[in-house]
Image (cartoon, rainbow, N blue to C red; front, side, top):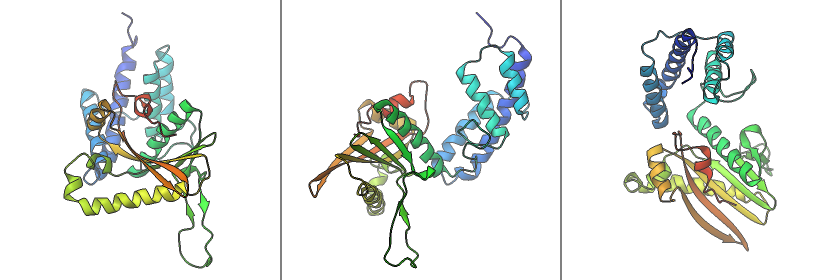
Length: 282
C-alpha cells in the first residue's frame, strides 16, 4: 500500500499546522458560542479536531511552508489541497472563500452573513444544475430602489433579495433566514412561543412576498431558507420533509412559496447535491 506521506517530517509538520488552525478557529468561535447555537456546534467540532492532533505542538504556517508541503507529496488529494488552502486563509487572517488575496469573508463575519454565503453556494450549485443565472444581493446585483415622494424622510431606500435565479421565463427568489424556525416547526418550542414565533415568521413571509412582487415572469417562486442541525435534517430528508410548500394566487398570478431547511454542516454521506436534489422550486 503506498504511503500518503513518504517523508514523515511533512506529516509531523502538517499536524502541527493543523492543530494551530483548529485552535484558531475554536477560539474565534467561543465568544459567540454562548448565544449562538450554530457557533457553539462549530466550536464543538473544532474542539474535537484539536483533540485528534493533541500529540503535536501548534505551529503557525506561512504560505511558503504550505506550498512546500504540497510540492513534497507528489499529487495531493483534493481534500489535502483544500485543507492547506484553508490553513493559508487562516494564517492570512482571511476567510472562508476565494483564491485571491482580496477574496473571502473574514473570520469576524457574523454568523447570519456566514449562513447567507452558505445558502448562496447551495443556490449557485442548484442553479448550475438547472441552467439558471444567479444574482446575489451581497454583490449589489439585486438592489431595487424605492422612489419615495418625499426624499428627505429617513426610510428604507431599496429592497435587496438575497438571491434571484432566472431561468428562461421563470424567476426564483431565495431569502436566507438565520433562525431556527424550520426546526421549531418540528419541536415543542413552536407551541410554547406560538404568538412570538408566528409573528416573526409572518414577517419573513411578507418580506419574501414583497421581493416576489418586484419581478415579472410567467412563473415566480419564492423560498425562505432556514438552518438545521444535520441529524434533524437527515431525519426529515429520509421522509422528503425538508421542504414545506404553499401556493398563492393574486390578480391572476400564481406564486409558489416554499420553506426550505438546509444543514449547516456536511457529512461523508451528505453533499451539496443531496441537499439541493429536491429543490423543485421552479
